[in-house]
Length: 355
Image (cartoon, rainbow, N blue to C red):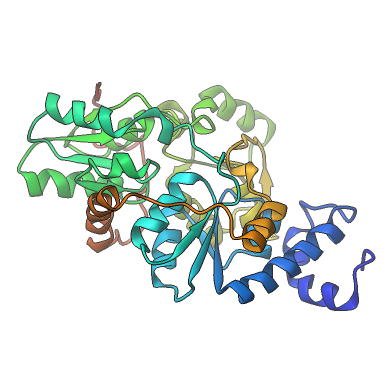
């Protein structure tokens, strides 16, 4: 098939079945050879690859040992007995893996794979926020650096942010909580709870670009399609969508309901990856691509394993404090289902206090 050796074709046939709608026959021979080489190197190096939902399909389906959102990947890494972790994601994810797996070597294939949201705030910023609002708990999105997590009381994901905010308010005996750094996540959480939210003006460059007019245009072009949005999008986008929730909630929705046509308002590789498991669902654009995630390729994953580069470390004092914030979240029972952000039937609509 496609000029591949019989052994390579046989080894990669299940992957091709899942990526054939997104990879051309011209590209596939080179990618298939890399997939085989990477999977061989993993065994030699006693390594696992954590592939985020936003990785391209050939990475997600071809070499990922664990796939999912950033925290889910870090938790799987901590449970794994492998000595080496390769983070097919961005830098803050590699830091989180190192925080939860301090004895393991964590590699990232490209040191330039950053995050606009994570870079919007520093540990020094958090210290100033705490000085301005003494006594209030700080809830920090996992999409942050280790330096920021070290100044945090507890971390959250988009799947459990409402639960964590309400837990923190009860534990600290307060009616307001600091939720940083994503402004839109904070505003969308605020509509689901009576706890007051103090927020930071950070955002994801992928999700902030979506607009309500994008949704309206999709409704006209594809009147039967169901539209699902991520809570890092502006509130008006969530209000116009049929369903809003974390990447896990969006995946669960598609896998369980299998709508005939669906639009995912998030990073576009996620749709490509889910498509591999539900080929009967028709996924429709739009496509906003994360330039940081796309720095990770099969080629530099292979090079990371071949040369054992580039190692991600976290200073012990920062890692110890950051681990407490992450572990507090991990230790809480997860929500029965990932949070749904229903802004149409929201409890109330209240303005957050923006720092």
